[in-house]
Length: 128
Picture 1 (cartoon, rainbow, N blue to C red):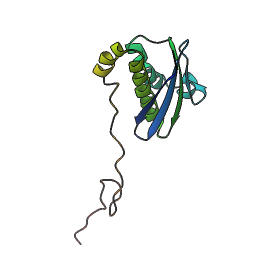
Picture 2: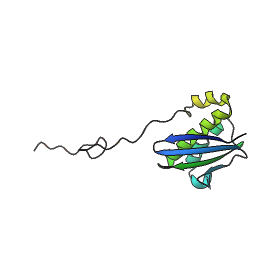
Picture 3: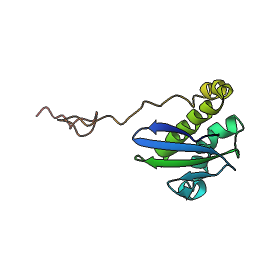
């Protein structure tokens, strides 16, 4: 099996993933998954597509991720893994699509507008 590389994005996070046949190690920015994401919830988010199609422990993933926060990075990696699994086998696509793991989440932070405190919050109005 050749190296499969995919990209996953979420908010301002971008994850570049390289997948090879192996023992199931996930390396993120040259660190192990448990070291990079100490939180059990973030580890579950990253492994969600693998557990769904029971591919856990069959491939090695090397991920470069930058930008955003921890949750955005975890969800970007999840999208990249789901896309890589679809390239391996077409039969993985329907269950991943049903769970919504192949959809790029388009929600981004709304920009701040001039004449306002934040994106939508306005300065206090006083009639006098």
